[in-house]
Length: 164
Ligand code: ZN
Image (cartoon, rainbow, N blue to C red; front, top):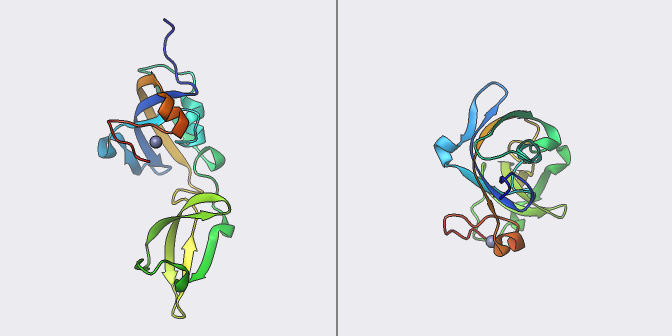
């Protein structure tokens, strides 16, 4: 049997550390557990997929990613101002509120930056890590073929959890 490598339609489990240019750790397996994702479905940063492509179990990578290889550049056109009335009634609108909304035909992660006295809500729909240079150190722990259902959904169903 051929050696398993990271390629499209494989589920890959990695141990990882994500840090900023200055070395401060943003996220890691140590904190949040190992990460598994379906390769080739934009489940992780594009630059991370590229770096892992073709690698085998036990191999490691250490890459520094920026712009479109990471979470994209910071986009001023993703800053919005809307009135509080545009939010559902049951939502408590406050600074720092995070939510997902469809903006420019894409489901985006949004943050309420501030609420002005006239009741307008300033929203930033940039990914919190947009515009940052990120370093990823990762080791491949496991590679397996995805199930039909996973391929159909475009994401991993791990540990018995069906996330969506
Ligand atoms: Zn699913």
